[in-house]
Length: 191
Image 1 (cartoon, rainbow, N blue to C red):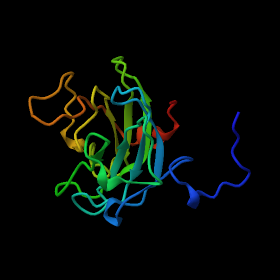
Image 2 (image 1 turned 120 degrees about the vertical axis):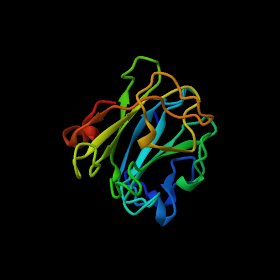
Image 3 (image 1 turned 180 degrees about the vertical axis):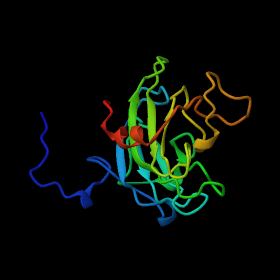
Image 4 (image 1 turned 30 degrees about the vertical axis):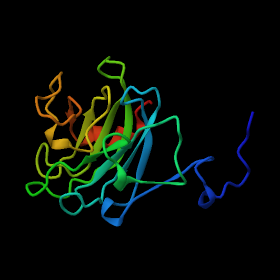
């Protein structure tokens, strides 16, 4: 069985032994990361990383980046600005002009398969969402589905429907909101 070296210099990852996830400054500082499970049904576990200070629509809207797993592996660096729907998706802030600064992505996790459809689901915290009053916080559960999501899924468009909307864009089909208590425990959920 292969073993990790006693000292593994992360700056030397070359794609064969791991890779770095990064992006432009406007895509925010990545502050949380977790396995996403197989959210798109391709047989490979993906990753989810959160950047609560991302500037997607306004400052500190926040975002989470879902990177789909794949057999062909990755290069030394994966730039989240290249997410296009086929390699992953951006789960972007909720409020925009009406509710800036939600800090989406401060906590991220796989939620397991909570709706029993055989796809992994995700939970994303939004510490300062105004879901139940100013800065009350919320967590958003995004159901996985065949093929994954479109390139940029705005969490405010989640509608709880059991089937995809009639719009041409693919998107996750449901969300559940919880108050701030769930947001603070999102990273503690079993994977």
